[in-house]
Structures are given as structure tokens and as C-alpha cells.
Length: 233
Image (cartoon, rainbow, N blue to C red; front, side, top):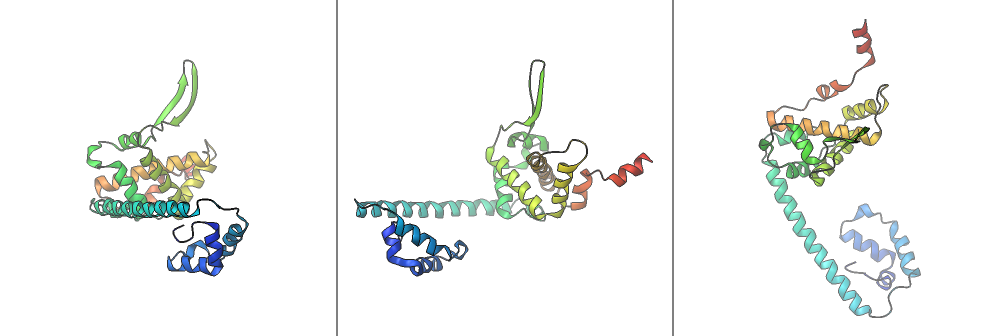
């Protein structure tokens, strides 16, 4: 957008010119093969014929402002990350596969000082993941999460749950158990919400007590058939 905002600019550059811009900007992940496709669309585009000069000036102004805002946002995120790294035991949470720094720092930034909470349920309520019954009069509806509280905290916890299920074997196993168990199997979304709440409890315990993450302990929620048979015998 900065160098070639309009279709005519793209056609003047050609596919090699587009690839060169990506190369200089280190945007290899975009896929150089798409340059030809973009060029084709540019050639077929009607484009803007009137007020081209003014239009280009406006586009370049907006691009410059976006880049300035991106730089400011990156600086703010860097400051938040540095503050989060100062929190005792926060590094232990990164031992959970799939939980990266950005996700963790997003949770910690939204959660705030953990010492102000007496119980993890208070944080669960703050995130909007607290359970409420959808009932009225004699009608008893389903139990759902409240969705009240900090939307961003709920977002980061849900992202952490999805990432943990994708990358951590213990959470994959737990997700499979929740969705396939014989009694009260959960839907995939319900399972991810339950796992998000479980991750919140783990994070709370690590920060509160300085404990080390233990995947085996986390899997104690699974009721294995062989154990149930042993108890029945």
C-alpha cells in the first residue's frame, strides 16, 4: 500500500517488482507465488481514474498513520511483557506446551495483581467464565457461562485452551476424554471452555504457591475404565 496503492502502480511494478517489495520487507511468509495472482487482479481492475493524485496522497497518509500506531502498540506490548516477566513464578506457566509469552502476558495483564483474589473462582467470575443457570419460574434451562466481566481475559484464556489442546499431549487427552466419555460427553466448544477454566486454576496455583507444572497431576480428572473396574471389584 505504501509503494503501490493503486492497480496501475502494481501493473507498472510487475510480478518481479511485487516480489522485490516483499523480499525487502522480509514478508516471505506471504508466498511469492501470489504475486502473479495479485498482478492479474490489478490488470483486470477498473481502478480509480479521477483524482488519482489526491487518492494516492490519502492512502499514503493512512498507511503512515497505521505504521506509527503499530510502532506505538509494539512499544506498549513490550512494556507490558517486561512487567509481566517480573511477576514471580510466571516463567513456570510457560512450561505448559502451547502457552507462549504473548498468550500468557495477555492473561496476566487482564487479570492484574493476583494477590487481590482470595480464590480462583473470583478470577473465573471476572473473566465471564462463571456458570449461571438460564432458568425462569418453573422452567429450568441449561447452565451456561455468564459472559460478564473482562472480555479480553476470557479471550486470552480461550486462546490458551485452544493452543494447549493443539500442542500439549496431556490437554489433547483431556479434550478427547471430555468429548467422548460415556456419561455427559461435552461438545467441543464446551470442552474448550472447561479446559480454559482448568488452565486458569493451574495458572492461579502456580502464581499463588510457586508450584511447578505437572502434566500427570493435571490428568487426574480423567476417570480411566480400568481404574473404575478395579474399584467396582
